[in-house]
Length: 300
Length: 248
Ligand SMILES: Cc1cc2nc3c(=O)[nH]c(=O)nc-3n(C[C@H](O)[C@H](O)[C@H](O)COP(=O)(O)O)c2cc1C
Ligand code: FES
Image (tube, rainbow over all chains, first blue to last red):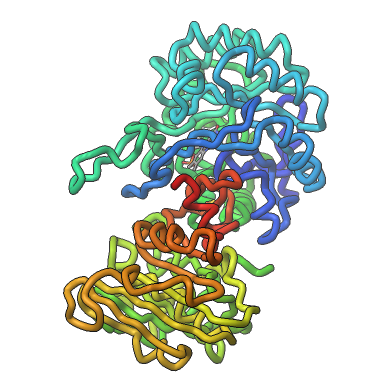
């Protein structure tokens, strides 16, 4: 019997494949295409205390092997999420992770306090969004500031707390260590890389914010290296993210030390791609005689 | 709803004017293509990940299960699509987005700019009202024969003066003659139409934007409207004009 289950911070995932924040909304649109209960879990669109309209101008720009995005955390706010989206999500019979962003430490704490009272399974603290001016990634670059945010949130948070790391960190291993020291139960990495594009005809940056976030297969080798390095340095479970397009990529991340994986941009290639990845992992395990993912986790 | 990708087989893909192509696809699955005027499909006409994203194209016709798209060669995606030959297969996801209300009577104006004619041809076919079709082009005109079939009158303008009125289509359109208008084309043109019709008649427009998911999940195509942020791929592409151009 092949066992794809993963127990991460006391929460059981039926398989290691999670839809990454921002690629999957609150699951509603995908639920019209397939049963969300097949997924290991879903990380919600980044939520902030107050609703946000997001960024102006071009928000999506294709590049070789990936996309640049400048969504800017458009979301309906925590209260709306809790009353209008969460009831639908918790009925889907999959692990629901609330991805939380913020401008200030107080905002993060207030948002987490509200989520404490809900049926959310876990909280993923986004201190790594490159697309908002204040807060966001500003918290996730320096180990010291990250330590402060994560400790404050930890004190408030009654749910398992995952901290999502930015690959733009000054030192990803030190950042990971300080988040764990501050009380993170787990880590997810990576968020998008800071990138940009130029419209040469108009001689200006494609994005109003100039800098945007790069994702997709072009970031995979770097993301994989970061997951590997971080997994060697910390003892908490890790969710590997970055350019996972198929089951082979997912297995690579698991062998590099990830407990689960998150799939983002790949959902835009094919809305059912997460199901292909789940099936692919299962077949690979069968072919290789792997009974549980623990056998291959972190073998590198 | 079966909205995952499905395979289709190309029956024809021809350049009908410079850089303007008409693509016809037959479904190679059991259920024939369907959809309403204003809706679109996401197309992937290549194996692998380059171009990375699928391309949205609005429906220009559906007949006997075969779907027609009219598109302009504008970037890497449409360039790849333009190279396809009959017999080639591609993947399609749809129909997506909102549609025009076709259940109305009276005098209707359809106003297109350039390739904006694409969704309006299908609208003209679907309407049972009196249609006056205003189509503006830069220089070369196309699809006029198709729209004549469904229209009471067809008015053409070209910026070069090669065919019809020389100038912009907005210069020969008079909202006072109509009960309702529909428009698709460059943003500047649609904005002008909405302004001209303000306080007189409602105008519905079909918007365009860069898309990633095409189904409403990524918020890559969101635009600001008087009713808050709206997704072009989900609440749109059809919007009430004054909700989109509400500032001026
Ligand atoms: C359009 C888009 C929106 C995103 N929004 C969020 C977000 O709100 N919060 C977050 O933590 N990450 C967000 N991300 C980052 C993804 O969750 C993921 O970390 C990143 O895209 C790398 O994975 P991928 O290469 O599989 O896409 C977003 C990514 C994309 C492409
Ligand atoms: S393209 Fe993703 S929400 Fe419209």
